[in-house]
Amino acid sequence: MKIHLIAGARPNFMKIAPLWHSMKECDALRPVIVHTGQHYSSSMSDSIFADLRLPAPDFYLGVGGGSHGEQTGRIMIAYDKICQDDNPDLVLVVGDVNSTLAAAFVGKKLGKPIIHLEAGLRSFDMRMPEEVNRVAVDAISDLLLTPSSDADENLMRAGIDRERIVRVGNIMIDSFEMLRERIEKTNTFQKVGLASKEYAVLTLHRPSNVDDPVVLERVVDAILKLSTLLPICFPVHPRTSIALKKIGATLQLKDAGVRLIDPLGYVEFMSLISSARYVITDSGGIQEETTYIGVPCLTLRESTERPITVSQGTNKLVSLDNVFMAASDIAKKENQTKKSDIDLWDGNAASRVVSAILNNYVS
Ligand code: UD1
Image (cartoon, rainbow, N blue to C red; front, side):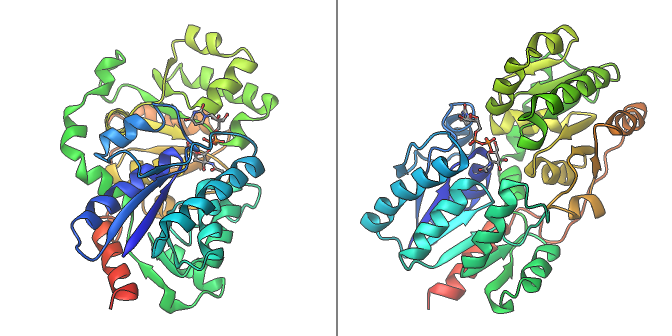
């Protein structure tokens, strides 16, 4: 069976890599990588592909950025042609980005079975573009592969048939385990002139934190205050870089000693957060990765679609008003590492995905 693995944005690559490697070992399945080009910079795409030992994509759609409508529309037009010409048996989409939505819609309209990996996550905040994507993709998917029990419950509450839901665990942990040895040998903190456990890592890219200049000014003030606790290393996402330049804050942060660096590859980034005292982020995936490696995480958001990272992990939701207090508490204590033990976050999710596909589509 030929399976299109759809990937477009950085967080998708860590999810398709373990699948591609597992499917390559399985005689019954032929994985084909379709990269939409939603993320196109070398630091956001090529270097991550290389780290994850992925080959060049079989199809590259080169759609680039733009408004949500433009970007989603361009992916749909480009993928429609590929999907018709290459005629896969199955279309597998991951996560919640615009590429996930666009490819799922195209595949479904062409009569292809749609498999959604990381189905069922919900922030219940429809102002987030990703929440719209999650709800829409789950509604049209044929096989829904979930990371945790809260996701199963969300899907059943939405009326999705139990038979179509398979809990496979967290696929991102597979990528971490696949590269653990290299991650442990890569001391990224040294390259940025920091000492192990004596710094914090910051990442920000959510529209709710960076798009409105007034909010971003407040975020910058909070970072300046946080930098008095421990040095901060801040790999800057392209969206955030543009927004910071617009309000003229880049120099101000640098002057305060904040290490502003380009986005890192997967191995270097996982190494950086593994040796951090704590992480401040608004990313979805990093909430899970810090939970798995046991590093305290403060999530600068009102909601999370990954509540298990709060109830069973190291994650805490914070606002601009209380982030300093929460960070001060962590900065005071030297060893805050707390290992989590969440069911099926074990590095074997990809093989469970392969089994679910074989059970459902290969007789
Ligand atoms: C997207 C996803 C988000 C995910 C994030 C991870 C959606 C709705 N959002 O948001 O869920 O957490 O990726 O990074 O799909 N840009 C570059 N180079 C790149 C990629 C982007 O310069 O390689 C620029 C774009 O041109 C644009 C901005 O960064 O100006 C934002 O990119 P976009 O793909 O629209 O959304 P993200 O904020 O990255």
